Image 1 (cartoon, rainbow, N blue to C red):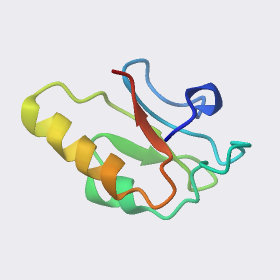
Image 2 (image 1 turned 180 degrees about the vertical axis):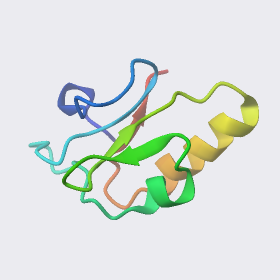
Image 3 (image 1 turned 60 degrees about the vertical axis):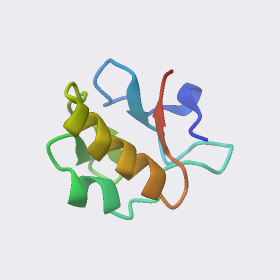
Length: 82
């Protein structure tokens, strides 16, 4: 589960976020490119290749796409507030 206290500083405000690579819980982004490769309208990469949320999803289809990235993240660095 993503650690919100270690969220990437570039995340746009909202329920969805990505953790920074320096997350001490071991759930930080590893710059695999999966989320920003599959959903570039919502996830982007910073200068180090780590993911952050560029745009918050609104529609059911957008939320479903972001949920798919959360589920597929190999290190659980994508989080969503309830």
